[in-house]
Length: 226
Image 1 (cartoon, one colour):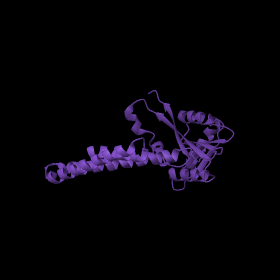
Image 2 (cartoon, rainbow, N blue to C red; image 1 turned 60 degrees about the horizontal axis):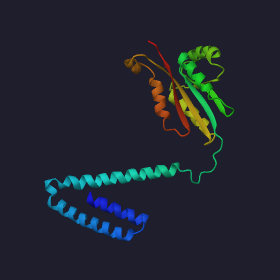
Image 3 (cartoon, rainbow, N blue to C red; image 1 turned 180 degrees about the vertical axis):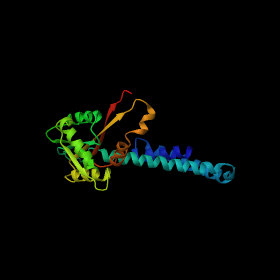
Image 4 (spheres, rainbow, N blue to C red; image 1 turned 120 degrees about the vertical axis):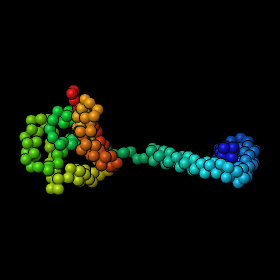
């Protein structure tokens, strides 16, 4: 620890070069070399008596801390406003994922409509795996869809995720200035153990979309009373 602290002070004086830095750098440099030699001697003579732990742990911790520092520096550099041109206006599409039509979906549609603006399109998306079920949904949507258009995505292989991802790809191919907000209705049971019985598809969708560029995922909960 003495060697590391002295080395750290040497680095500080070298980069900051404050008044009197040369004198202080020499003092700390001598301290770093001296304590470093002592550390090596102790490590060599006491290696089999437990010094090996320090020899392994300390360099590992130092490497980990340096990696963390590099990470923070890289994050700060990527988030910096320096050199950023004035960003263009974003286009925005809001998609409500519909598996069936119930009160939770109606609430999600209501929420999605609050995001509407001149440059924002609001749509509902349903992946069709059964034409008869689709027909029933369209019939109910005419009454409860609140004027939001319903997009039917055909899925010949009964996959729920692939048609949705392909639809998102098509939207986002329009340009980097196109944001997509995916609104996922979820109803929340009143008892904790009931959660494992519901919303598994919603969880899967969120996992797939989590790291997509220009994609925002929003949960709209509907609380069940019993």
